[in-house]
Length: 182
Length: 182
DNA sequence: ACATACATGTAAATAGTTACATGATTTC
DNA sequence: GAAATCATGTAACTATTTACATGTATGT
Image 1 (cartoon, each protein chain N blue to C red):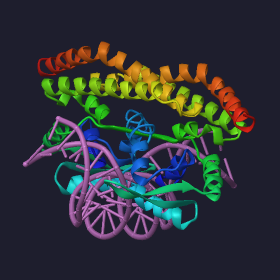
Image 2: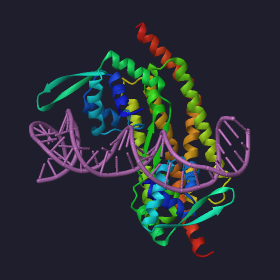
Image 3: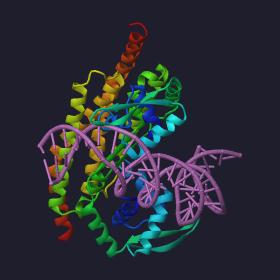
Image 4: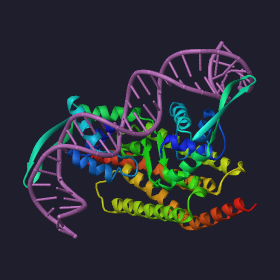
């Protein structure tokens, strides 16, 4: 599923400007998809060209004029079709995991710092998801499910970090000592 | 952290051919990084050019000749330096989550199928990780940690899918009925 | 007979990010 | 006075995948 399609999906939930779609990627969709302006605006232009979305210009006081995009019936049909043909693939890339894999090559202070940063980030992500879950009435069942999915992951990860983090630091130190004096 | 560096990291654990490095990405590193031949071979060529790795050609009976790469002292130093400067960022992209977000646009059978596929995939991933964890003596502490990390995530996700999956299908059906007859 | 494992490599295509350009308004 | 929010857009760059090219050996 590419950004073009994702924009179509976002608009299937209601009209929005490019800027507002970016906000959606930073909130509701943040735990499973990212997108920058550099991909959203060209996507919107292409979808307009294809007749899958339309827009009206809205002049505002004290704010720049914005283009409010709406999905067309053709767009709605196309999105439903693309969705049916989408395979549920997943991809995950983690430099945190790379750092852990080679933790023995890191100075102890850096390792401790990285573990603390990761814990803090998991905590922050968990709070963000819980906040969206609690303070949003207009969520579909499916969105609530994805939020629960994210909350579950982050809760179990937080528990792991808190009980296993310090232990790892000690293990690495022991491993280093053994290696230097066998 | 790019593929060039990751290849350097893989070789810091022991000498290997390009083909064997690919295998590492499919096993030990599979839960947090992916790489194809199209990125590994050029990476190895570049690292050789930079003097960070060296190789010897090994002729085999009944198998094609292979290049066995080793990390040089300069390579080891460079990798440690790169690692210290790597930030623990993470990126996750999930078409499964996209499908769930727009689950109300999917035919019921397709939704059920996707949920079952996802459950099966989580199960498979969990088993793979547990197998690597159990049947591998040469794992560093850090690698064991990443495996526990992956196992934890998949265990909690599996529990969620089993208790929440069917419920979601029912909720979606109810939502659809309400929408058509308000 | 067909797929998979072994083994290396290149070129084209893809899909995206980052940085730039522009500018008013509001909050700290 | 600096930073963030609102708002749109382009162009260069980056990193990676996919598909192609080539070939033997083994398992199903």
